[in-house]
Image 1: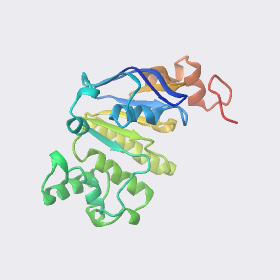
Image 2: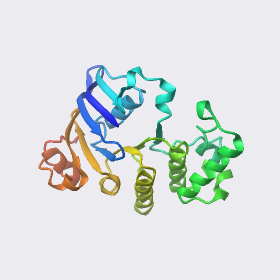
Image 3: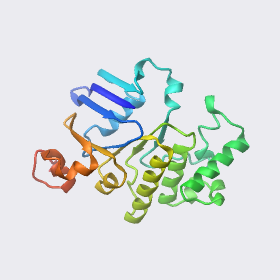
Image 4: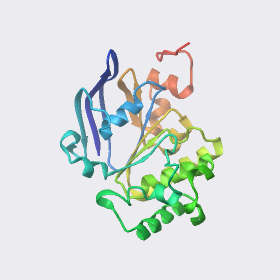
Length: 248
């Protein structure tokens, strides 16, 4: 579904991506691991077209993203942002139905609300939550609303940006389970960026390690612990010593 070939991106003298090659099979959950500042978010933004690569090729379902219709292209995606990123001035159901109330996918208000309530129910939130505002919700509930919004328009591909950041271990576990269930249930292709190894083991089919602007290793999550790659080994075990340089 997603194919990256020799993707490079620099900001001034900072070469963030230095020739990334990556394949994300259709219907699978790929998790990109790596420390803060390694380029995970830049990689995601390049795929979405929010950042233009300096060179290389990005294909979605065999089509070069640089040559596709922008609106049609973005309609295929759902996104769960790191901080939920809900609109404070909109009610919960309006946040969930944001895409359904606008653009080519625009639906009547009553229908959009009905879909939003159904998606809220799918992530474990009761219909009464629909008319609340984000400020009235806990962090975990806000994250669920963000997940409901990500799936509201039935996307083919969903991106998850640090989905458990800021959550306690129990709520993080709940969100991981929901993500896994939804990915399998909807049959979507998923790409997650995270440094939370608990999330990786809970939601990944395949894992890719990004460091130094390159994918150092990629493979099934079941093979991660025995990858034999020193970068992966150091990262997943949180060791201070190894090829990954720590900032002291």
